[in-house]
Length: 226
Image (cartoon, rainbow, N blue to C red; front, top):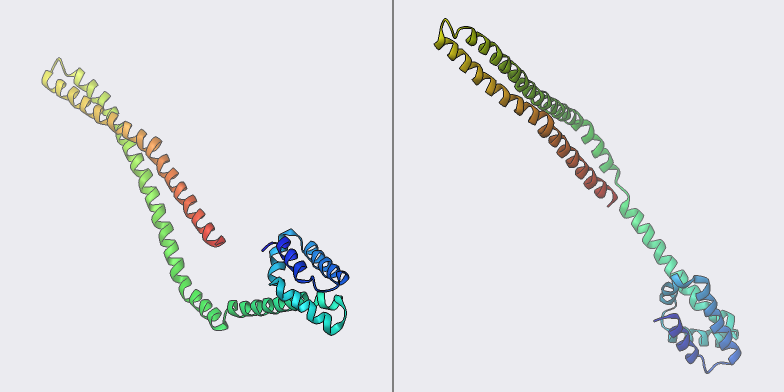
């Protein structure tokens, strides 16, 4: 029901009282709606209830008191008091419900003290493991790089020695040159692997860790807000 419908029904139900009293009653309710504002119109309608009940209350109080002012104000005051009382009861009940018992607070404190060494140990172990993985990963990259440098160096060394022995010992010279080429090929392969691990795989791993951290942080923020 809207304000317009409520006032129309109330005016129709008050046709059997004097025009002055009817106009005063209707003006009072219109002012009441205006003071509440359009955003609170439904709250006013809920407080007033059925127009027929309001009209009967006005007529009854008019008969008893002989004035329109008291008869008009009575239903609103009654409804407002009732709603305020319910609200107070609800707020009080809510406060009592949400109050945390002392024994629960003490229990949480004791658990925090008891479990704090375990939490510190777990955190220390996690940090140590993470640091160990990082050191091992960069040591692997460094190892491939050093191996590549050594193998490429062997390419030039063996090649030079083999070339020097081609006249006196052709088979040995060819073998040394062949060994140098093999070392050089493996060295180039290790060098490519080092570049791939350092320039492609490592940034991708850190980028993935950053995205995972942002995702987990966003989930935790949403849970805290909820």
